[in-house]
Length: 484
Ligand code: NAD
Image 1 (cartoon, rainbow, N blue to C red):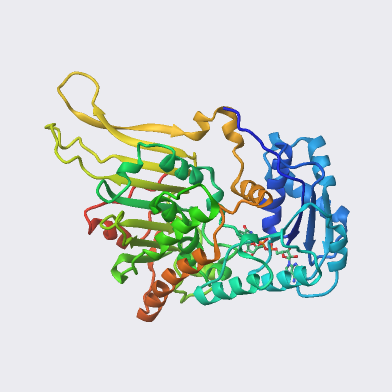
Image 2 (cartoon, rainbow, N blue to C red; image 1 turned 60 degrees about the vertical axis):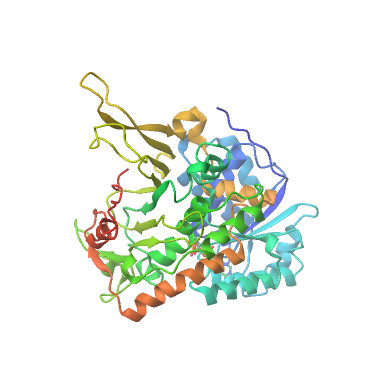
Protein backbone atom coordinates (compact mmCIF):
# COMPACT_ATOMS: atom_id res chain seq x y z
CA UNK A 1 0.00 0.00 0.00
CA UNK A 2 1.72 3.20 -1.13
CA UNK A 3 0.92 6.21 1.00
CA UNK A 4 0.08 9.38 -0.84
CA UNK A 5 2.18 12.46 -0.21
CA UNK A 6 0.31 15.67 -0.78
CA UNK A 7 2.71 18.63 -0.85
CA UNK A 8 1.94 21.52 1.47
CA UNK A 9 2.06 25.16 0.39
CA UNK A 10 5.47 26.86 0.50
CA UNK A 11 6.19 28.22 3.96
CA UNK A 12 8.59 30.14 6.15
CA UNK A 13 9.12 28.27 9.40
CA UNK A 14 11.04 29.95 12.20
CA UNK A 15 12.31 27.59 14.91
CA UNK A 16 12.93 29.52 18.10
CA UNK A 17 15.31 27.29 20.05
CA UNK A 18 16.59 25.97 16.71
CA UNK A 19 19.90 24.90 18.29
CA UNK A 20 18.25 23.00 21.16
CA UNK A 21 17.80 19.32 21.86
CA UNK A 22 14.25 19.05 20.51
CA UNK A 23 15.17 20.85 17.28
CA UNK A 24 18.13 18.53 16.76
CA UNK A 25 16.39 15.29 17.64
CA UNK A 26 12.93 15.81 16.21
CA UNK A 27 12.15 19.02 14.35
CA UNK A 28 15.06 19.25 11.89
CA UNK A 29 15.23 15.48 11.16
CA UNK A 30 11.44 15.46 10.76
CA UNK A 31 11.52 18.34 8.29
CA UNK A 32 14.27 16.64 6.31
CA UNK A 33 12.23 13.44 6.07
CA UNK A 34 9.19 15.34 4.79
CA UNK A 35 11.43 17.13 2.28
CA UNK A 36 12.76 13.76 1.17
CA UNK A 37 9.19 12.50 0.81
CA UNK A 38 8.43 15.42 -1.50
CA UNK A 39 5.96 17.05 0.85
CA UNK A 40 7.87 20.29 1.38
CA UNK A 41 8.10 22.57 -1.67
CA UNK A 42 11.66 23.53 -2.48
CA UNK A 43 10.90 27.24 -2.15
CA UNK A 44 10.17 26.91 1.56
CA UNK A 45 12.50 28.45 4.13
CA UNK A 46 13.48 27.18 7.57
CA UNK A 47 15.01 29.74 9.86
CA UNK A 48 16.75 28.78 13.07
CA UNK A 49 16.51 31.44 15.78
CA UNK A 50 18.24 31.09 19.11
CA UNK A 51 20.51 32.88 21.50
CA UNK A 52 23.75 31.37 20.24
CA UNK A 53 25.94 33.63 18.16
CA UNK A 54 26.06 31.66 14.94
CA UNK A 55 25.90 32.31 11.19
CA UNK A 56 23.98 30.47 8.48
CA UNK A 57 26.90 28.13 7.83
CA UNK A 58 27.15 27.22 11.52
CA UNK A 59 23.45 26.43 11.71
CA UNK A 60 23.59 24.38 8.53
CA UNK A 61 26.46 22.34 9.95
CA UNK A 62 24.51 21.78 13.16
CA UNK A 63 21.42 20.72 11.23
CA UNK A 64 23.35 18.40 8.92
CA UNK A 65 25.01 16.68 11.88
CA UNK A 66 21.65 16.31 13.67
CA UNK A 67 19.98 14.83 10.58
CA UNK A 68 22.80 12.36 9.99
CA UNK A 69 22.62 11.34 13.65
CA UNK A 70 18.85 11.02 14.01
CA UNK A 71 17.61 9.90 10.59
CA UNK A 72 18.07 6.27 9.55
CA UNK A 73 21.15 5.89 7.33
CA UNK A 74 19.11 4.44 4.44
CA UNK A 75 17.04 7.62 4.35
CA UNK A 76 20.04 9.90 3.90
CA UNK A 77 20.27 10.95 0.28
CA UNK A 78 23.23 13.30 -0.14
CA UNK A 79 21.70 15.29 -2.99
CA UNK A 80 18.38 15.74 -1.22
CA UNK A 81 20.13 16.56 2.04
CA UNK A 82 22.22 19.25 0.32
CA UNK A 83 19.06 20.75 -1.23
CA UNK A 84 17.34 20.68 2.16
CA UNK A 85 20.28 22.29 3.96
CA UNK A 86 20.22 25.10 1.42
CA UNK A 87 16.72 26.00 2.66
CA UNK A 88 18.13 26.75 6.13
CA UNK A 89 19.35 30.01 7.58
CA UNK A 90 19.88 31.43 11.04
CA UNK A 91 19.23 34.56 13.06
CA UNK A 92 20.70 35.19 16.47
CA UNK A 93 17.88 36.39 18.69
CA UNK A 94 17.30 36.72 22.40
CA UNK A 95 13.62 36.19 23.12
CA UNK A 96 13.88 38.81 25.83
CA UNK A 97 16.07 41.25 23.94
CA UNK A 98 15.72 43.63 21.03
CA UNK A 99 18.48 42.47 18.67
CA UNK A 100 17.86 40.27 15.66
CA UNK A 101 14.17 41.00 15.14
CA UNK A 102 14.57 43.29 12.16
CA UNK A 103 16.93 40.76 10.56
CA UNK A 104 14.24 38.14 11.05
CA UNK A 105 11.57 40.41 9.62
CA UNK A 106 13.64 40.94 6.47
CA UNK A 107 13.85 37.20 5.91
CA UNK A 108 10.09 36.66 5.99
CA UNK A 109 8.49 36.61 2.57
CA UNK A 110 5.14 38.00 1.59
CA UNK A 111 2.23 35.71 0.65
CA UNK A 112 3.85 32.67 2.22
CA UNK A 113 2.55 30.67 5.16
CA UNK A 114 4.36 31.82 8.31
CA UNK A 115 4.85 29.46 11.22
CA UNK A 116 6.80 30.05 14.40
CA UNK A 117 7.84 27.04 16.46
CA UNK A 118 8.41 28.00 20.12
CA UNK A 119 10.90 25.25 21.00
CA UNK A 120 12.06 27.12 24.09
CA UNK A 121 11.11 27.17 27.76
CA UNK A 122 7.44 28.17 28.27
CA UNK A 123 8.61 31.14 30.35
CA UNK A 124 9.70 32.70 27.05
CA UNK A 125 6.39 32.20 25.18
CA UNK A 126 5.06 35.59 26.23
CA UNK A 127 8.25 37.40 25.21
CA UNK A 128 8.27 35.74 21.80
CA UNK A 129 4.58 36.38 21.16
CA UNK A 130 4.93 40.03 22.13
CA UNK A 131 7.99 40.65 19.98
CA UNK A 132 6.65 38.81 16.94
CA UNK A 133 3.61 40.99 17.13
CA UNK A 134 5.41 44.21 18.08
CA UNK A 135 7.85 43.95 15.18
CA UNK A 136 5.08 43.19 12.73
CA UNK A 137 6.57 39.78 11.93
CA UNK A 138 3.45 37.76 12.68
CA UNK A 139 0.25 38.53 10.83
CA UNK A 140 -3.24 37.18 11.36
CA UNK A 141 -2.57 34.12 9.23
CA UNK A 142 0.63 33.21 11.08
CA UNK A 143 0.72 30.13 13.27
CA UNK A 144 2.61 29.51 16.46
CA UNK A 145 3.53 26.06 17.73
CA UNK A 146 4.07 25.62 21.45
CA UNK A 147 5.67 22.69 23.22
CA UNK A 148 4.83 20.92 26.41
CA UNK A 149 4.70 21.44 29.31
CA UNK A 150 1.67 23.67 28.92
CA UNK A 151 1.56 24.88 32.52
CA UNK A 152 2.11 22.89 35.71
CA UNK A 153 -1.36 23.53 37.10
CA UNK A 154 -4.57 25.28 36.12
CA UNK A 155 -3.37 28.72 37.19
CA UNK A 156 -0.14 28.58 35.15
CA UNK A 157 -1.93 27.09 32.11
CA UNK A 158 -4.48 29.90 32.25
CA UNK A 159 -1.69 32.41 32.46
CA UNK A 160 0.06 30.90 29.42
CA UNK A 161 -3.19 30.88 27.47
CA UNK A 162 -3.78 34.51 28.41
CA UNK A 163 -0.23 35.53 27.41
CA UNK A 164 -0.60 33.91 23.99
CA UNK A 165 -4.15 35.20 23.51
CA UNK A 166 -2.90 38.76 23.83
CA UNK A 167 -1.33 38.51 20.40
CA UNK A 168 -2.73 35.40 18.72
CA UNK A 169 -6.23 34.03 18.14
CA UNK A 170 -6.97 30.47 19.29
CA UNK A 171 -7.08 29.41 15.63
CA UNK A 172 -3.41 30.38 15.30
CA UNK A 173 -2.13 28.48 18.35
CA UNK A 174 -0.93 24.89 17.91
CA UNK A 175 -0.28 23.22 21.27
CA UNK A 176 1.71 20.09 20.52
CA UNK A 177 1.01 16.77 22.18
CA UNK A 178 3.13 14.46 20.08
CA UNK A 179 1.02 11.46 21.16
CA UNK A 180 -1.74 12.82 18.97
CA UNK A 181 0.55 12.67 15.96
CA UNK A 182 1.10 8.92 16.27
CA UNK A 183 -0.32 6.87 13.44
CA UNK A 184 -2.15 4.46 15.74
CA UNK A 185 -3.68 7.23 17.79
CA UNK A 186 -5.29 8.63 14.69
CA UNK A 187 -6.24 5.15 13.71
CA UNK A 188 -8.26 4.99 16.89
CA UNK A 189 -10.60 7.50 15.33
CA UNK A 190 -10.65 5.69 12.00
CA UNK A 191 -11.35 2.35 13.65
CA UNK A 192 -14.09 3.75 15.81
CA UNK A 193 -15.83 5.98 13.33
CA UNK A 194 -15.22 4.40 9.93
CA UNK A 195 -16.45 0.92 10.91
CA UNK A 196 -19.88 -0.17 12.02
CA UNK A 197 -18.33 -3.07 13.89
CA UNK A 198 -17.05 -1.52 17.08
CA UNK A 199 -19.23 1.48 17.84
CA UNK A 200 -22.38 -0.44 18.87
CA UNK A 201 -20.29 -2.25 21.51
CA UNK A 202 -18.40 0.85 22.60
CA UNK A 203 -20.22 1.50 25.88
CA UNK A 204 -20.46 0.29 29.44
CA UNK A 205 -23.10 -2.27 28.55
CA UNK A 206 -20.46 -4.22 26.61
CA UNK A 207 -17.12 -2.88 27.83
CA UNK A 208 -16.01 -4.16 31.21
CA UNK A 209 -13.03 -1.85 31.59
CA UNK A 210 -10.27 -0.07 29.72
CA UNK A 211 -6.55 -0.16 30.53
CA UNK A 212 -4.14 2.44 29.25
CA UNK A 213 -0.46 1.70 29.85
CA UNK A 214 2.58 3.77 28.99
CA UNK A 215 5.65 1.98 30.34
CA UNK A 216 9.24 3.07 29.93
CA UNK A 217 12.45 1.23 30.72
CA UNK A 218 14.52 4.38 31.09
CA UNK A 219 14.82 6.29 34.34
CA UNK A 220 15.07 10.04 34.77
CA UNK A 221 18.88 9.99 34.90
CA UNK A 222 20.32 13.18 33.53
CA UNK A 223 17.14 15.21 33.89
CA UNK A 224 16.17 14.14 37.40
CA UNK A 225 16.20 17.61 38.91
CA UNK A 226 13.87 18.86 36.16
CA UNK A 227 11.56 15.83 36.33
CA UNK A 228 11.35 16.04 40.11
CA UNK A 229 9.35 19.26 39.75
CA UNK A 230 6.70 17.51 37.70
CA UNK A 231 6.31 13.73 38.18
CA UNK A 232 4.33 11.16 36.21
CA UNK A 233 0.94 12.76 36.80
CA UNK A 234 1.95 16.10 35.30
CA UNK A 235 4.40 14.70 32.75
CA UNK A 236 2.26 11.91 31.28
CA UNK A 237 -1.27 11.63 32.67
CA UNK A 238 -2.53 15.21 32.41
CA UNK A 239 -1.59 15.42 28.74
CA UNK A 240 -0.72 12.25 26.78
CA UNK A 241 -2.82 9.71 28.65
CA UNK A 242 -5.69 12.13 28.95
CA UNK A 243 -5.68 12.53 25.18
CA UNK A 244 -5.75 8.76 24.69
CA UNK A 245 -8.59 8.42 27.17
CA UNK A 246 -10.53 11.13 25.35
CA UNK A 247 -10.15 9.46 21.96
CA UNK A 248 -11.45 6.19 23.40
CA UNK A 249 -14.28 7.72 25.39
CA UNK A 250 -15.54 10.57 23.22
CA UNK A 251 -18.83 10.62 21.35
CA UNK A 252 -18.65 10.58 17.55
CA UNK A 253 -18.04 14.16 16.39
CA UNK A 254 -20.50 15.31 13.73
CA UNK A 255 -17.61 15.75 11.33
CA UNK A 256 -13.86 15.18 11.31
CA UNK A 257 -13.28 18.82 11.91
CA UNK A 258 -10.85 20.36 14.45
CA UNK A 259 -13.41 22.00 16.69
CA UNK A 260 -15.96 19.21 16.42
CA UNK A 261 -13.34 16.68 17.56
CA UNK A 262 -12.03 18.91 20.32
CA UNK A 263 -15.53 19.74 21.56
CA UNK A 264 -16.16 16.03 22.09
CA UNK A 265 -12.84 15.50 23.87
CA UNK A 266 -13.58 18.44 26.15
CA UNK A 267 -16.92 16.89 27.14
CA UNK A 268 -15.11 13.73 28.23
CA UNK A 269 -12.63 15.66 30.39
CA UNK A 270 -15.47 17.54 32.03
CA UNK A 271 -17.26 14.27 32.79
CA UNK A 272 -14.28 12.76 34.66
CA UNK A 273 -15.04 12.10 38.32
CA UNK A 274 -12.60 13.26 40.96
CA UNK A 275 -10.26 10.35 41.76
CA UNK A 276 -10.53 8.85 45.25
CA UNK A 277 -7.31 8.53 47.28
CA UNK A 278 -7.72 4.73 47.38
CA UNK A 279 -7.81 4.69 43.59
CA UNK A 280 -4.34 6.19 43.21
CA UNK A 281 -1.03 4.37 43.60
CA UNK A 282 2.21 6.30 43.22
CA UNK A 283 5.68 4.82 43.11
CA UNK A 284 9.38 5.59 42.85
CA UNK A 285 11.88 3.17 41.36
CA UNK A 286 14.50 1.88 43.73
CA UNK A 287 18.20 1.45 43.06
CA UNK A 288 19.21 -1.81 41.42
CA UNK A 289 21.29 -3.49 38.71
CA UNK A 290 24.14 -1.12 39.44
CA UNK A 291 21.99 1.94 38.83
CA UNK A 292 20.76 4.57 41.23
CA UNK A 293 17.16 4.86 42.34
CA UNK A 294 14.75 7.68 41.57
CA UNK A 295 15.81 9.71 44.58
CA UNK A 296 19.48 9.46 43.60
CA UNK A 297 18.61 10.67 40.13
CA UNK A 298 16.40 13.45 41.45
CA UNK A 299 19.21 14.55 43.77
CA UNK A 300 16.79 14.67 46.69
CA UNK A 301 16.86 11.87 49.25
CA UNK A 302 13.43 12.91 50.54
CA UNK A 303 11.71 13.46 47.17
CA UNK A 304 8.01 12.58 47.08
CA UNK A 305 7.64 12.96 43.33
CA UNK A 306 6.27 9.87 41.57
CA UNK A 307 8.09 8.13 38.72
CA UNK A 308 5.07 5.77 38.50
CA UNK A 309 1.35 6.28 38.86
CA UNK A 310 -1.68 4.06 38.50
CA UNK A 311 -5.20 5.46 38.71
CA UNK A 312 -8.74 4.25 38.42
CA UNK A 313 -10.76 6.85 36.57
CA UNK A 314 -14.53 6.94 36.24
CA UNK A 315 -16.42 8.87 33.62
CA UNK A 316 -19.84 10.11 34.65
CA UNK A 317 -21.87 10.03 31.49
CA UNK A 318 -24.43 7.71 29.94
CA UNK A 319 -21.95 5.86 27.80
CA UNK A 320 -19.34 5.03 30.43
CA UNK A 321 -21.02 4.91 33.83
CA UNK A 322 -19.86 1.61 35.35
CA UNK A 323 -16.82 1.11 33.10
CA UNK A 324 -13.63 2.12 34.89
CA UNK A 325 -10.59 3.31 32.97
CA UNK A 326 -7.34 2.17 34.60
CA UNK A 327 -4.33 4.28 33.73
CA UNK A 328 -0.72 3.50 34.58
CA UNK A 329 2.58 4.92 33.52
CA UNK A 330 6.07 4.68 34.91
CA UNK A 331 9.78 4.73 34.38
CA UNK A 332 12.32 1.90 34.73
CA UNK A 333 9.65 -0.72 34.24
CA UNK A 334 9.98 -4.17 32.71
CA UNK A 335 9.50 -3.17 29.09
CA UNK A 336 8.94 -0.16 26.88
CA UNK A 337 5.38 -0.34 25.71
CA UNK A 338 2.33 1.85 25.18
CA UNK A 339 -1.03 0.25 24.66
CA UNK A 340 -4.72 0.66 25.17
CA UNK A 341 -6.70 -2.47 25.99
CA UNK A 342 -10.47 -2.54 25.84
CA UNK A 343 -11.83 -5.55 27.67
CA UNK A 344 -15.35 -6.60 26.76
CA UNK A 345 -17.86 -8.26 29.05
CA UNK A 346 -18.84 -11.90 29.19
CA UNK A 347 -21.47 -13.14 26.75
CA UNK A 348 -24.82 -13.20 28.56
CA UNK A 349 -24.98 -16.99 28.49
CA UNK A 350 -22.49 -19.70 27.67
CA UNK A 351 -23.59 -22.70 25.62
CA UNK A 352 -20.22 -24.42 26.14
CA UNK A 353 -19.16 -26.60 29.03
CA UNK A 354 -15.56 -25.46 28.78
CA UNK A 355 -15.96 -22.48 31.08
CA UNK A 356 -12.29 -22.61 32.03
CA UNK A 357 -11.07 -22.06 28.51
CA UNK A 358 -13.13 -18.94 28.13
CA UNK A 359 -11.45 -15.50 28.12
CA UNK A 360 -12.86 -12.06 27.52
CA UNK A 361 -12.59 -10.42 24.11
CA UNK A 362 -9.94 -7.75 24.30
CA UNK A 363 -9.14 -5.14 21.68
CA UNK A 364 -5.52 -4.11 22.14
CA UNK A 365 -4.29 -1.00 20.40
CA UNK A 366 -0.49 -0.86 20.48
CA UNK A 367 1.14 2.53 20.12
CA UNK A 368 4.68 1.20 20.52
CA UNK A 369 6.53 -0.90 19.71
CA UNK A 370 5.03 -2.49 16.58
CA UNK A 371 2.11 -0.11 16.10
CA UNK A 372 -0.99 -2.07 15.38
CA UNK A 373 -4.06 -3.76 16.78
CA UNK A 374 -4.99 -7.13 18.13
CA UNK A 375 -8.47 -8.43 18.73
CA UNK A 376 -8.49 -11.40 21.07
CA UNK A 377 -11.27 -13.78 20.06
CA UNK A 378 -12.39 -17.22 21.19
CA UNK A 379 -12.19 -20.18 18.82
CA UNK A 380 -12.38 -23.92 19.15
CA UNK A 381 -9.10 -25.52 20.13
CA UNK A 382 -8.02 -27.39 16.99
CA UNK A 383 -8.09 -31.17 16.87
CA UNK A 384 -10.29 -33.89 18.22
CA UNK A 385 -11.18 -34.08 21.87
CA UNK A 386 -14.48 -32.29 22.03
CA UNK A 387 -15.37 -28.63 22.06
CA UNK A 388 -12.63 -26.94 24.01
CA UNK A 389 -12.15 -23.20 23.73
CA UNK A 390 -9.00 -21.22 23.21
CA UNK A 391 -8.22 -17.60 22.61
CA UNK A 392 -6.29 -16.36 19.59
CA UNK A 393 -5.33 -12.89 18.40
CA UNK A 394 -6.66 -11.44 15.17
CA UNK A 395 -3.44 -9.60 14.55
CA UNK A 396 -3.13 -6.43 12.55
CA UNK A 397 0.37 -5.10 12.71
CA UNK A 398 0.48 -1.92 10.64
CA UNK A 399 4.02 -2.59 9.46
CA UNK A 400 2.83 -5.89 7.92
CA UNK A 401 -0.42 -4.57 6.52
CA UNK A 402 1.13 -1.47 5.04
CA UNK A 403 4.00 -3.39 3.49
CA UNK A 404 7.43 -1.88 3.07
CA UNK A 405 6.17 1.65 2.97
CA UNK A 406 4.83 1.02 6.46
CA UNK A 407 8.39 1.43 7.68
CA UNK A 408 8.31 4.97 6.47
CA UNK A 409 5.30 6.03 8.49
CA UNK A 410 5.99 9.66 9.38
CA UNK A 411 7.08 10.31 12.92
CA UNK A 412 4.55 12.19 15.06
CA UNK A 413 6.47 15.46 14.83
CA UNK A 414 6.66 15.32 11.04
CA UNK A 415 2.96 14.85 10.70
CA UNK A 416 2.14 17.55 13.21
CA UNK A 417 4.43 20.14 11.61
CA UNK A 418 2.83 19.47 8.23
CA UNK A 419 -0.59 19.91 9.85
CA UNK A 420 0.53 23.31 11.15
CA UNK A 421 1.50 24.37 7.64
CA UNK A 422 -1.82 23.07 6.30
CA UNK A 423 -3.63 24.96 9.05
CA UNK A 424 -5.30 21.86 10.49
CA UNK A 425 -5.70 21.96 14.27
CA UNK A 426 -7.47 18.62 14.76
CA UNK A 427 -4.46 16.96 16.38
CA UNK A 428 -3.59 19.89 18.63
CA UNK A 429 -4.97 20.68 22.05
CA UNK A 430 -7.28 23.63 22.38
CA UNK A 431 -6.79 26.05 25.27
CA UNK A 432 -10.02 25.09 27.05
CA UNK A 433 -9.14 21.40 26.76
CA UNK A 434 -5.78 21.94 28.46
CA UNK A 435 -7.39 23.98 31.20
CA UNK A 436 -10.09 21.36 31.80
CA UNK A 437 -7.41 18.68 32.06
CA UNK A 438 -5.59 20.71 34.69
CA UNK A 439 -8.83 21.43 36.53
CA UNK A 440 -9.25 17.66 36.93
CA UNK A 441 -5.55 17.06 37.75
CA UNK A 442 -5.00 19.82 40.33
CA UNK A 443 -7.22 18.43 43.14
CA UNK A 444 -5.67 14.97 42.71
CA UNK A 445 -2.17 16.36 43.23
CA UNK A 446 -3.30 18.71 46.00
CA UNK A 447 -4.98 15.75 47.68
CA UNK A 448 -1.85 13.63 47.99
CA UNK A 449 0.23 16.64 48.95
CA UNK A 450 -2.20 17.47 51.76
CA UNK A 451 -2.27 13.86 52.94
CA UNK A 452 1.53 13.76 52.98
CA UNK A 453 1.36 10.67 50.79
CA UNK A 454 4.70 9.02 50.01
CA UNK A 455 5.27 7.06 46.81
CA UNK A 456 5.92 3.31 47.30
CA UNK A 457 9.27 1.95 46.18
CA UNK A 458 9.34 -0.50 43.29
CA UNK A 459 12.11 -2.60 41.83
CA UNK A 460 13.62 -1.50 38.56
CA UNK A 461 12.59 -3.88 35.79
CA UNK A 462 9.34 -4.74 37.59
CA UNK A 463 5.73 -3.86 36.73
CA UNK A 464 5.57 -1.13 39.39
CA UNK A 465 4.56 -1.15 43.06
CA UNK A 466 2.66 -4.12 44.49
CA UNK A 467 -0.18 -1.84 45.53
CA UNK A 468 -0.92 -1.13 41.90
CA UNK A 469 -1.76 -4.81 41.44
CA UNK A 470 -4.22 -4.51 44.30
CA UNK A 471 -5.91 -1.57 42.64
CA UNK A 472 -7.22 -4.03 40.06
CA UNK A 473 -7.39 -7.22 42.13
CA UNK A 474 -9.77 -5.43 44.45
CA UNK A 475 -12.14 -5.08 41.51
CA UNK A 476 -11.64 -8.70 40.41
CA UNK A 477 -9.51 -7.62 37.43
CA UNK A 478 -5.85 -7.83 36.46
CA UNK A 479 -3.42 -5.60 34.69
CA UNK A 480 -2.13 -6.88 31.42
CA UNK A 481 1.45 -7.97 31.51
CA UNK A 482 3.95 -5.26 30.63
CA UNK A 483 5.96 -6.64 27.73
CA UNK A 484 7.18 -5.64 24.32
P1 NAD B 1 17.24 23.01 25.09
O1 NAD B 1 17.67 23.60 26.39
O2 NAD B 1 18.05 21.91 24.50
O3 NAD B 1 17.24 24.19 24.00
C1 NAD B 1 16.70 25.43 24.26
C2 NAD B 1 16.84 26.33 23.04
O4 NAD B 1 16.28 27.59 23.38
C3 NAD B 1 18.25 26.59 22.59
O5 NAD B 1 18.26 26.67 21.18
C4 NAD B 1 18.55 27.96 23.17
O6 NAD B 1 19.50 28.72 22.42
C5 NAD B 1 17.21 28.59 23.06
N1 NAD B 1 17.04 29.68 24.01
C6 NAD B 1 17.16 29.64 25.37
N2 NAD B 1 16.94 30.87 25.88
C7 NAD B 1 16.68 31.68 24.84
C8 NAD B 1 16.36 33.06 24.73
N3 NAD B 1 16.29 33.87 25.78
N4 NAD B 1 16.13 33.55 23.50
C9 NAD B 1 16.23 32.78 22.40
N5 NAD B 1 16.50 31.47 22.45
C10 NAD B 1 16.73 30.93 23.65
O7 NAD B 1 15.73 22.65 25.24
P2 NAD B 1 14.87 21.55 24.42
O8 NAD B 1 15.08 20.24 25.07
O9 NAD B 1 15.18 21.68 22.97
O10 NAD B 1 13.38 21.98 24.73
C11 NAD B 1 12.75 23.09 24.10
C12 NAD B 1 11.28 23.10 24.52
O11 NAD B 1 10.66 21.91 24.09
C13 NAD B 1 11.05 23.15 26.03
O12 NAD B 1 9.87 23.88 26.29
C14 NAD B 1 10.83 21.70 26.41
O13 NAD B 1 10.03 21.58 27.56
C15 NAD B 1 10.10 21.22 25.19
N6 NAD B 1 10.20 19.78 24.96
C16 NAD B 1 11.39 19.20 24.72
C17 NAD B 1 11.46 17.84 24.48
C18 NAD B 1 12.77 17.17 24.18
O14 NAD B 1 12.74 15.98 23.88
N7 NAD B 1 13.89 17.83 24.23
C19 NAD B 1 10.29 17.06 24.48
C20 NAD B 1 9.07 17.69 24.72
C21 NAD B 1 9.04 19.05 24.95
